[in-house]
Amino acid sequence: MEKMHRSRWRAFITLLLCLGAPAWLAAAQPLPPVVIGLTAEFGVQGSQAAQSIEKGIALAIDEINAAGGVLGGRQLKLEIRDDRGVPARGVDNFADFARQPDVVAVFCGRFSPVALEIAPQASKLGLLLLDPWSAADDITKPRGSEPNYAFRLSLTDSWAIETMLEHARARGINRIAMFVPNTAWGRSSEAAMLAYANRHAALRHEVFWYNWGDTDFSDRLAQARAKGAQAILTVTNEFEGLPIIKQMASLPAAQRLPIISHWGLLGGDFGAAARPYLEQVDFSVVHTFSFSDPHGAKAQTVAAGVKRLFGLEVSQMRAQVGFAHAYDMTHLLALAINKAGSSNRAAIRSALERLDAHEGLVRHYAKPFTPARHEAFEKRQVRMARFDKDGTLKSIAGK
Image (cartoon, rainbow, N blue to C red; front, side):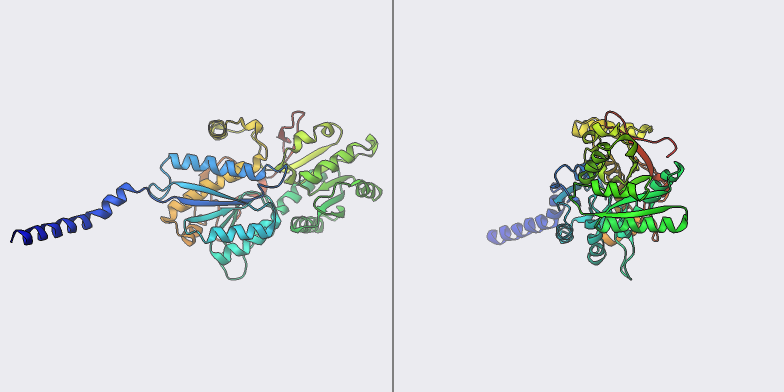
């Protein structure tokens, strides 16, 4: 009898433990993180764009997690992959992230050829691609009947080229020599030039193609002058932008032409590297954000966060557009996760299209995205800038 009593008591205790264990375990175990991926060109020598984008995401995550995270207490976590600016590597990295169920979105880097290859995979795999830099127009273009999973918080080539040409025409420049890379970025920029030229009959332009890694532009510069160009419009990264301005500066002063540049060269430390030539050449560049421009309290708070988290003054940070765009996009993503009420990728995509107003670092987002518009910027965010003697980028007044 006593043995039967002990057996029943053990069974009762076991039942209580079984019933109570889930609550105890849930209380003891932290909620799993919500993961954000980043595939970018970390291994490209001299480039600081990927690192700047990473810092923008990291600071936003730090702020969001300090405020309680998302979905009632889940922390955001960043995982990075190096694609070295190679499209195939970017696609492989993106597919790897897609296989991880906790990953809700993946940021790309600054190279449009990589983003253009990833974008159709984003729709196919049902994983958000968030673009904080790459400018090729077609990155966010809908593809067939598949839901569009590509969202951008950056400028586009059309807006960049239009702003550069408007800057030229305001100075009485109507004959342009356009230096473009033989890549998807170059072709996107050329298409934007042709579209603008079709609307402005007085504009004349000649296209000069080059390959990434080219360092000798002297013949092209001579041909541009011979054809009557009044300015050189360049679509380059810092690797090609530096020899172009150097070779322009080496010409006699009367033969030097203004250079109006796309923003790819902002991904490195072009301002410091080109400092000896910037006083000799009329050089301007299109951009969207610089901490050196006047800003309000938001920018001051972010600058303090940069100092606290990275030990940097914002004036020391290069590739600032990537930082600012990634920072704002991460906050928008967190808002979408909470609006969706889950980490379901499709639900977050839908929530991104229905976000309410948000006060960001770069701008006030009245309605960041819609089902028909996956661009968080407008052309009016795009402006022209120059480097000062210290290599600091400052917007041109009224531009």
